[in-house]
Length: 206
Image (tube, rainbow, N blue to C red):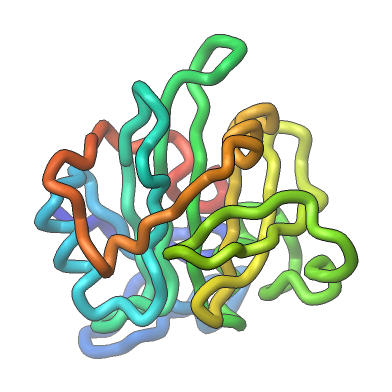
């Protein structure tokens, strides 16, 4: 079941006119509504990914004990941004959560999770990168983004759109030291992809 859409930058509930691909946020004006499902299923992932204009990234394979716990997307039909939420055990105990975000420039989705006041990373993507992932077979450098102490944020580019990695807690960024390989779910949704209940940070502003 699809829930009420929210602002991709702050998570405010939005009212979308039928047939419109924009909505109005009291704080951020016209935005692309971010949709999500209350219960995640393989068929729901396939439905969103079939005509998505940007990748929907997931670690391949997922670390032991991890599951995909949420999917959010902006733009219908043809998602212009996607969020895949993964949750699993943290190395120092407790639970870790990782969001993998793909978005067209000017959407502001990744910046919303990072707590940044602008739409795109701009000059943050400059100089020496801090990490890298393998995104659909291509190396994608990532730059660390200044953010609040409770999370870690990295951003780069893959497939011509922004790729953001946001982790809670910040120490969960250890995943990026493991030669993380990402699968684009538009290519295939593995039948054995583990799914779980919606994560705490699936929507921005949480």
